[in-house]
Amino acid sequence: MPITSLDSVNVGDTLGPQEIYLSKDQVRNYARTCGMEAPRFMDDEGARAEGLPGMIAPGNMSLGLLSRLVTDWIGMSGARLARLGTTYRQPVQPDHTLTVSGFVTHIEPGEKRVEIDVWIENEDAERLVIGTASVLFP
Amino acid sequence: MAVEYDPALIGRVFEVTDPVSVTAESIGKFCTAIGETNPLYTDAAAAKRGPYGGIVAPPSFAVTFRNGRHFFTHVPRFGRAGFDAGKDVEFRAPIRPGDKITLSSHVKEIYEKTGRSGSMVFVVVRSTVQNQNGEAVAHIDHRFMNRP
Image (cartoon, rainbow over all chains, first blue to last red; front, side, top):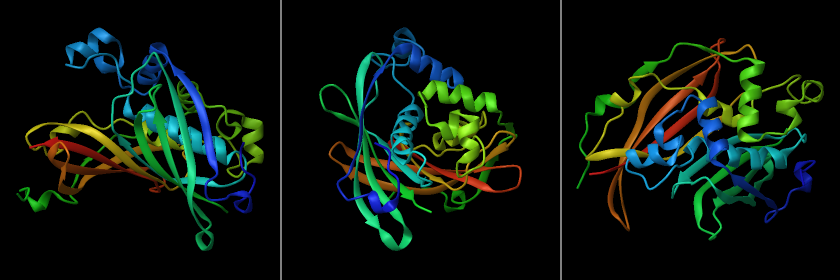
């Protein structure tokens, strides 16, 4: 559910979870759209030639999914995503269902700032990408 | 063991890219690629009533501008080839159709860390994403991890 105002936000509020089945075509399309046609983002054969077990998604795509989680939550409330930090812990592989989630860890009322932990999990509940986001309210 | 490098590297801008024009079409293609449905980024009429007075790019569009071809020759390496460990992005202002975007990059910081898997050297490169008005719309701190 998108939020409406800072007053409606509480520590512990959850973002998502958004379940996303990430297909190889989606990853290829993202990579091509963003000019990142490295073999590891194109197919398994290309990835193996680069010494990887199989095709992976660009880190920027994971960052984009986490950004989308936060901006979906912001909705039309007028708040904005001011900062997003990501750590790539394990490669994100296509042909898997990802779960993108977050929760509010801190509210700084004076600055009208909300701090959020965000992450991307695979089907085995392994956190492949973790991050933190700051949202500023008007 | 202290990591050794030339301190003159820190803060020196090593690259400024040629401007890239942002269009409604390039924003639209990006939205499709990342599965974006937020009307602020996808619906001109709704976006007009929103806080930006028109369509803007989703925040993560800021990381899609390509570094120059020689970018990686300027990123210091320690031992085996570095890999992308993550990014810290500060979004300062929206990117809009009609913007002309350049990136300027410098090494911000080099530090060593010891984890479960041993010693790692992190190189942080900051790219400032700037529009045609000289406004920094985003700062992107890339963290590259090296195994010495």
